[in-house]
Length: 620
Ligand SMILES: Nc1ncnc2c1ncn2[C@@H]1O[C@H](COP(=O)(O)OP(=O)(O)OP(=O)(O)O)[C@@H](O)[C@H]1O
Image (cartoon, rainbow, N blue to C red; front, side):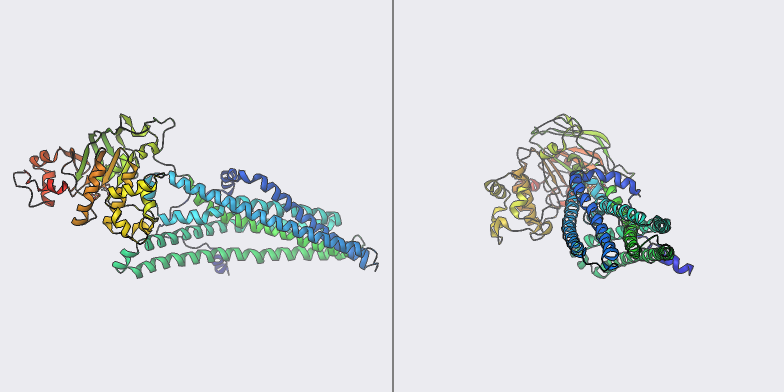
């Protein structure tokens, strides 16, 4: 028996795969204090909705009072005189009640949905203020599940919760008032059940909260697995991992079922217990009622009306108890939203940023050191170099040397942990973030395309560009012809992440996007690495056009695009070990020369001088 009870009341076992970030627990009061201000725009409407909510129990009370009149003044004396008036009053109350119920239901949904929409958009906008580091660390699926699922919890807590509480409380006050008016002795007997109600509700609410937390977390895990798995469908199919992935999904899904069932068990135990309490109350009333009736202190109509009022009173008391469960369930979701909103961007615009407008493009990297948050290793240390307007600086080094990390610092996705980067003499940390980024155009190794049309993707570089500019940029990027060959030309959709295009085509779209941005600073991170020799060759011309006249930082380890850079910086394990021009570094015959020989075995003589082929390669 005890074992069965324990099973009935036990929350589901937590997920051990760690797919979702734990949210700190919050008391319902704190959740409330925190999110109540978000409902401010709806306060006026909420007052109106509460007025409607107040009217409804008053009408119910009046209808029951009419019932008492029917029994005591129409049926018992068998007098027809009052009947037409009572019938008309009934009809009037029903019509008015219907109109109020309609207005109240619609208004509640209207307020709820609009609040939800604002909250969702606010959380989404907040996510976009967070630094890139947040997205590096978090599982996207969990974040999406919070945005689409858990936001609703706040609505049920802050809005529906309030209106249901007020409506139930008003009903309790109205019906309790009436039963005291009818017979205070009977009313006192009826109150015996109240502390029992409260105890049962309290007992359940804590358990419901723990069980609900698991349900919310599991729903995040399901979205996480689905997002990661479906987002990598080609990889999973190529390596035959479909069954393993289905297994992973199955585990999270069954975990969700168990968590839901545990919550349902705990919730379903609540109702029968409350029924029991209610029956105890009614029996006590009937016992005392017979005695009251016998001593003529109450009429039969009065006793029957009393019982109806009592059932009306128990309904809101019961729903207050149920509401506590709903509120605790919702607060488990609200905790997950609060955790997201508590995330602060690591990188932000200072209160009084220096305005630079369009930069000249002098970039100085001064003694920069960096380690990723929550790691113990310096990825970069003591990095210094200067890039002057219109020149090209190449950053070269083996895989993992820290080249891409450097671009992240230049874009201010992260701030250096030591030293500084200056643009036109100003530390990047002093600048307005969006102004800084508007001065930079990027072309990355893995081309980032949005699931829109070709034209939209090019225009992402400059939102107000007209069609002529888009075509011009595409021509300069050597993309115009292949775009015209596509089924819908510039209006062809590129598919998720541009998958409907080839690697080289994606790269040329990215170059067109950088072209149209016309920014003074250009960051190229391995722009040709994912392309074969033929495709690389095709993008080199457009890249050159893009680079001319801008301060360009090229990151590469295949050296294809770097040989004619004005300055080459060779990184090894996060430090600069060599710097100079291509010829100087080859003459040095050290790390850079070795790397170059690796890529172009036939082109470098052992004494380090170049055969000149490399230059022909980059200057076709
Ligand atoms: N978000 C991150 N969090 C923690 N460590 C990271 C993160 N990104 C990169 N690293 C680490 O930083 C080091 C440098 O990585 P980075 O991507 O800058 O190298 P890279 O020189 O660009 O390499 P590749 O040429 O292969 O792209 C690596 O050891 C990597 O493990």
